[in-house]
Length: 107
Length: 107
Image (tube, rainbow over all chains, first blue to last red; front, side, top):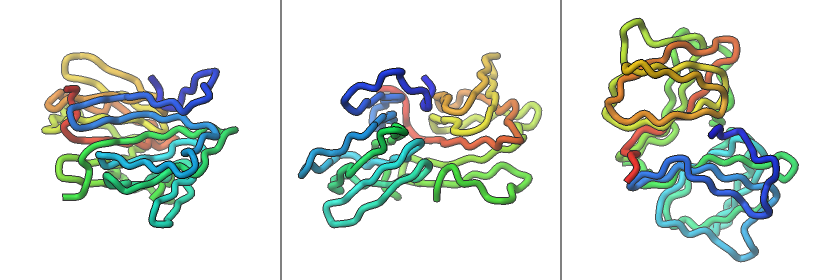
């Protein structure tokens, strides 16, 4: 599978595709095209996440009020349990994310 | 740092840039522009590697005779101590690699 290849028809929901799933690690591709986290919803993940946006534009917001707009190539590190949400994602240019989930915190 | 942004001047050598360095994990960007592994050289790494080519073309070869040409978006998983080398990398379109090194083997 090529990370830049999109299915001809994107489903209504975001697409989560594991590329490599190890004992303590998950590398996945995520495709978003206009979706956002539901109002009031926060991701609260047990694992750290490093995520890069490979295509599209998007905005991530944190519970503490921070937010970051991402263009293709921008990445963020989200420590475990740092509550965050996806504010918006571009629809015409679908977002392709590459996310690494695991124990990633600096030593 | 944006993974698609290249320095105006690329040095003669490949560029290795850690993006996230954890206890048991390293996420790094590698830029290659025409370089290849020296003749007879094999990478023999203590950690597993998952690597995706985000831009350019390249070819990886393994000691057992396998090889794979990569286009932008293609990725490979290289278990620890699987001896391999970079046969060639595109120069006009510099290669941008994103590599995850760690204990990645499927459970």
